[in-house]
Image 1 (cartoon, rainbow, N blue to C red):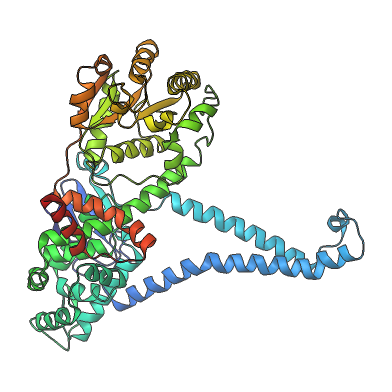
Image 2 (image 1 turned 135 degrees about the vertical axis):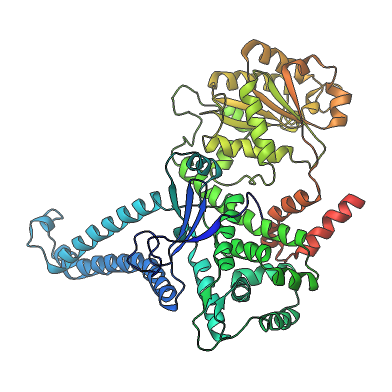
Length: 538
């Protein structure tokens, strides 16, 4: 379980001794969780009627925009067929359409335009005020506040998660259980398509799983006359799922979070998985895999919303930069690639990325990332590009472009030295570019990739203008070509360490969707873990 201990489940003092759906505080659920000056609230009573109503409400909410769009399309088609086209075919001028008595079809079309505009406005407002899982910083502010703050966690559960909770209630009723316990939710989750994908990745034998589940369910007391009521353990599981989503930095609590909470909370589920050969570490990594996908979708959506306001060309927002045709020819614009989602999202390097951005803010020097091949130097640079697009960077990087150049680009030209000097001059004239140099050791004369020592030109430019450069190299190349070079005094060396086995597995998991799509294959978790183990061995 990530984070602090769980708050204690307490009854709603406004509803006790009789719960009431008219209660403005808990809607009759009578369940609260208190922690310091923060109170978590669960509003949905656990009844079949409530969960059925939630399902219907969700279906209507999804279909309503579609119905309004169809209404508008049909109205336009009717106006076109019965009003506009007949007038046009009679040879009337277009402006006469506005002077004719409005046909009923045309009025219907105008009504559809108004309703569609209202729908767009309403959906936009709902999207802006949508409840999300509290980030830790905001929660800490509430915790230290003088007044108690109530956080309703109910709206942040996805419809699929709520459906699984309803299925757990149905499972308890079918088994004639007088209590709704975490094991019932585990049974319900295993029927969910998303959790089945998790089990398939784990290569779990479904026949053995079902047999073990039936044996575990047999230990739950039955009472045909009773209505299943959630236990305190079951309610605690809800806040535990909320904490899992919070730790994963997700906006919503989904079925993966419910599965994590159930396995943490229900010892019988843990034992069952262990008997099937699934360790706790394996579960942690597979859940991280699915969480990565959810967080990546969130980040892309945020980036695209911010990127819409970002200039797509060479000119910055302040309109102080200039066009850079030569830079565009010999380099790759990483911020432009990030704004359209063409860069791989950084996985497992959040702390390193934050430390790197802090270092850029704290020093006037340039940054040199030193690490073995495959340790994540490029991923850190991708992270900087995405942070720049999202405007979550120090002032040195705001409203700037991040462009990458390699010695190979320059070596392909007829005069690498002249091209590099012209490129730097154009880059400086633009005034809004941060330069990335991959494998900076390739720019030295000793390396021999080009017949010139391009690092001398780079050093002179940095000393004269204060150009910000982020470069990479390997430890061996650093000692062989750069350690005693005058250029190094202008850089702050930052070591990039090799990730441990679990982080490596999670990073590799982030590459899997593209590989599966490209090669039409399917990877299990065991295959990925084996790749990492064999790579370490050989």
